[in-house]
Amino acid sequence: MTKAGLFHMARVLGLELGRHGITVNALGIGATVNERNLRDDPAYEAHWAGVTPTGRCGRPEDVANALLYLTDPAAHMINGHTLLIDGGWSTVAHVP
Image 1 (cartoon, rainbow, N blue to C red):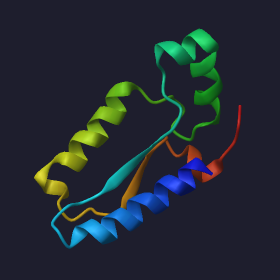
Image 2: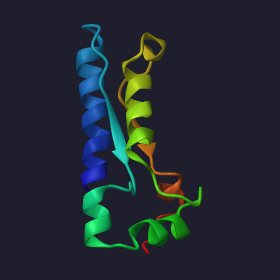
Image 3: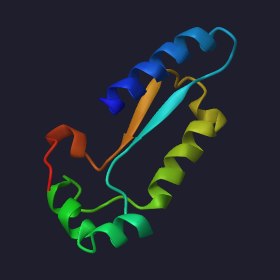
């Protein structure tokens, strides 16, 4: 439900603000290895890597690289989009 809200918010804000030269995009972040996730579940990475098409979990730098791209002038025509950074998980939607 929250991802659907994110998708639609990016689209509506992109539509409304695009005419003012402001692009709006969102990042849909999937399973990402971080201290909190590993503290909550020491096997977090193994669980999610097993159900993600790329066979691995995301890393904070994966998210940072996507954000850097969207803020680069090379991405000036990307507007109203949600970039999924989930290793393809959203195409299969399995839960470990």
